[in-house]
Length: 201
Image (cartoon, rainbow, N blue to C red; front, top):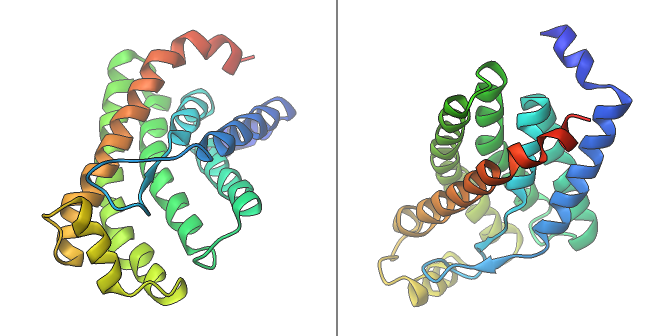
């Protein structure tokens, strides 16, 4: 394990990590809402890039790329949650990319990729729900000055099923993260093999 981690920190791999992190951070700037989720939930596909990097270089690389991506985004956009939103994005991103990359690392086949991606999506949905319930939304309430009533009202306007924090998680957060995970996984499946020669230079 130590040798595998040491092999990651070569000039070649660190260059790839830096490039993929920067690409992911740029993609993160292009966010768009989903019709059933409130406006503070905007979908970006940056995890698709990190999934490809994780498949190529392993789960540790995925963690590093998630960290760098969020630091770049923090530098570009600053924050209204004292960095809590970026921390939540880091945790949720790792929830998807790390299990997928870890499983694929030890089972490099199409079946291994599918198992890894499905595991990552399940992890994303579960951890994403907890992170939003206990970290992200409370941070908006306390640090950004958004009253919980305003958040729920904004959410109910686009999704009538939302009438409490719990229903916001169940009917907005969970399907939002499920869609994000599936789309990023499909992009990875479509592009990884085509780009694998470049990723393994």
